[in-house]
Length: 473
Image 1 (cartoon, rainbow, N blue to C red):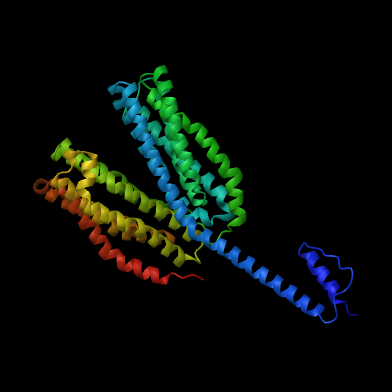
Image 2 (cartoon, rainbow, N blue to C red; image 1 turned 60 degrees about the horizontal axis):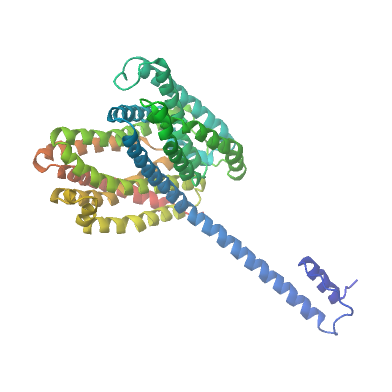
């Protein structure tokens, strides 16, 4: 049985949400033409919507790596600015003795918490994207291990007399120090949890609000406890921050992550986890201890003024290093989440680094005297200008080593990173100690260039070969 074309037309308009009532059929011979035109129009609209949807998804995938890197950069810069403000206000409100003693107490707290994390920060960033239904248990087990380590190690440190030079004698204050280290351990790990769960946009909000709460509480606690007020202002906001972030992680983000991102690879077993953590621990010690040792060597051999002239160029290039590490973390997370788009994410990371690094290095090298004069006329000396230029030139070579590190983590072959760091330490300090007496702070720049150049010679061919193996399937 044939149905009149005008009935088809009304049905089609109804599906499109535009029901039209025809009082009489169209003239003979026009029904089929109208029907075909409507079907063709509907087909074109569907194709247009499909292209727009795919374009939106593509832009989202393209921008996520950059957005996460920018979010982490904002977090680092915002935390640094609020940190400077915190200590500046503390110096005006508290005595120099209290500032000096509590700054040592907070430094010890952060160092102990960093060591107690057992390298789970990097492990979270690598494996949470693919943890799937195991995400919750994986995070909880890591939290328990790190909290236990922090509690035991800090209790021994605080109650054995090793910290008598700056920790208050009453047991209640030492117990508070132990609790603060435990809280700071989770506080640092939860940033990596957010990054690994592809929710890095919340990291700057968390850290900037934490810094703002510290500033707000500082005058109140100093008025209540002049001796320990600075430490109380620093540690108290941890409780509220931990509650808020972990509520979001366990009640909101993990369920979304389990539904959207199914596991794509097997999580490391205990033996492999120990190997990964051990290798990353060596890298952590290298990155944490080396700047401190350089500062101590410069102060001892050249004096405090020379250390100030080294500190400013190191601070300027350190901000760019933070950016490189932000891109590195975002790249690892996105590449682990979407291994079938590894070439795409690699190109995005290389392009992002190049877009910032190339002009920054050129500006730093060309305008080094002007940049240092803005800091202060006394810093625009020949040696300080040359040191800034050498440290700037070493950054592109450091980016090669960073990319090798990312591929090593993606391939779960990280022991070469430990070997790299041991060799780098040996080369850097051999050059530094050999040239320090003759060239002063320039020896730091020369050692940085030589170390970065050797890493590039060795790791650039490996990274290029690994890049050629990437693909978009």
